[in-house]
Image (tube, rainbow, N blue to C red; front, side, top):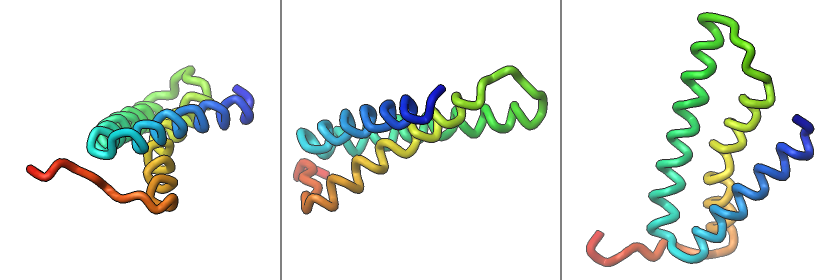
Length: 92
């Protein structure tokens, strides 16, 4: 996979997360944490399995998983750098 395609996928993921952050911060926080953690756990399991037994997983898979872990964090960082705050419901 070309590096430009990987960067474009990262930007698309970050843009989707950023739109979610701008529309509903509570839902964005939950989904960013859930999807980011799931991608991170899948990445860790993939790396551990790769250490135990060499597989034929292409190297771009790991780069894509790292981008999927970093995209929610990047969107949240951009959201806060724009000067926005969390507007969670009052019952929390």
